[in-house]
Amino acid sequence: GDSVTQMEGPVTLSEEAFLTINCTYTATGYPSLFWYVQYPGEGLQLLLKATKADDKGSNKGFEATYRKETTSFHLEKGSVQVSDSAVYFCALVGKGQGGKLIFGQGTELSVKP
Amino acid sequence: EPEVTQTPSHQVTQMGQEVILRCVPISNHLYFYWYRQILGQKVEFLVSFYNNEISEKSEIFDDQFSVERPDGSNFTLKIRSTKLEDSAMYFCASSEGAETQYFGPGTRLLVL
Figure 1 (cartoon, each protein chain N blue to C red):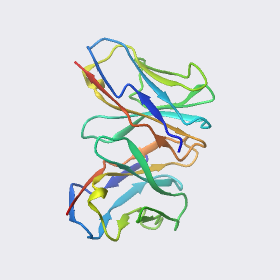
Figure 2 (spheres, rainbow over the protein chains, first blue to last red; figure 1 turned 120 degrees about the vertical axis):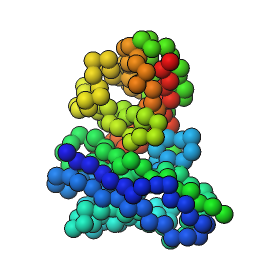
Figure 3 (cartoon, one colour; figure 1 turned 135 degrees about the vertical axis):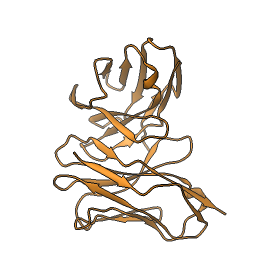
């Protein structure tokens, strides 16, 4: 079945460092891809999405590009802030699958001043 | 900005008791979902609901679980006889089409 694999956490960075969180997926067909963020004590917030190959999703300085050839959707940010500390979830929705989101295991990011 | 709301934020119950978790989806959304997240684990799909019926459910969603949209605004998840392993954070989500979902803040359920 469809699945999502993320890099293990926790990831600890200094403020203004470059961030990459790797995400790869397995799916039949061409799913839509998402990054959700969970700040401490809060629910899941949609960060960005891409619905077809080579699309780039972006929001709040974060970017991710839908790479069909490598089945990846890596999250990047050029300069992280302390306020970016959170758990990041990569997820997919298979086409024609009624919207069921399949999540990766989450990657905890901690940014130190 | 419209948002999904959930009540209660925390619920403590005894094993074997029934619980009802409530959600108010975004008003013009047509698709509704429940997910759960056991502490330290992945977010897992439970059920999706469209046009007043379940459209898909996972293996987790057994006969102890049910969902209902009792009126035009609420969407509920009922667990008939809670088990210790039902302790988790339960998230409601809604979407306008069957794709981009918006999540509520969650209900933390603790079964003792």
